Length: 282
Picture 1: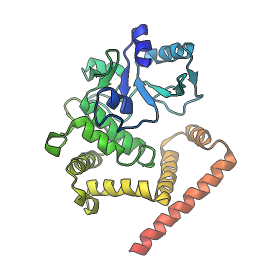
Picture 2: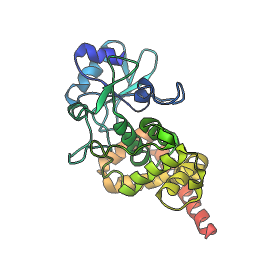
Picture 3: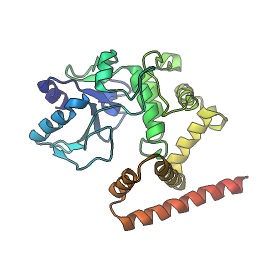
Picture 4: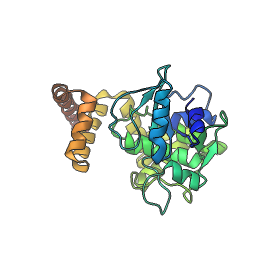
C-alpha cells in the first residue's frame, strides 16, 4: 500500500533494510524477519506521503527523536512504517552528506523490486553498505537492537554467494563513510566472507573480523555487556550531541526522570561488572 500510495502521488518510494531484502527476494523466504517497514522518500515530499497515508487511516506514533526519518506511522493492520529522508552512514565517494532518494535516483543506484512494479530498492552495494553502517555505527553500542549476526547475514545475502565469497561493495559507486573506519568496514566484509564459508576459526582470531565476531556474540549472550555498551553510548552522545537533543532522547526512551536515573544506575553497575571481569582475566 505504501508503494501504491507513493505512485498515486507521483513520487518514488525506495524501500530499505528488511523490506528491501523481501521485495528483492534476497535470502530465504521468511528467513529475514523485520520489526517495521522502512521507505526512503524525497526529502521535500516525505511529509506529503505521510499526510496521504494518515488520510487513508494510518496513525502517527508521536514525536521522533531521529533526524533522518519522520515519526513512525501505523497501518490499519498495526504494521509500523518509517518514512526516511536519508540513509545515515552511507555516502558516495566525493560527495558530502548521506545518500538520499534524490542522489540514489540520480546515480542509478536503485532498481525495480522483483515483487512489485511500484517499489524500488537500492542496488546490492548500497544494501550491503547500509547493513554495515546500520549494524556498526548506528547500533554498535546496542548489538541486540539490530539482532546480532543479522547484519552479517544481510551483507552476505546482498552481495551474493559466489563460491561462498561475497564480493566487496562497488566502492566506485557507494562506500561506507567516516561513520565507519576503514578497519571496521574491511573487518565487516572479512567477517561476512568467513561466515559465508562457515569458517568459525575467526571467532578466536585477533584482528578486526575476530573482534567484531566476539562483540556480536557477547551482545547476544551477555546481558551485562549489552548494558555496559549502552552506558558508553550515553557518554559518547554527551560529548558529540547538544545537551537539549541528548536530554530529549533520554526522556523519550526512559519516559521520566526517575526511571532514567534507575536505568542509568543499572548501566553503571553493568559497566563495572564487565570491567571487573576483564581485570580478573588478566
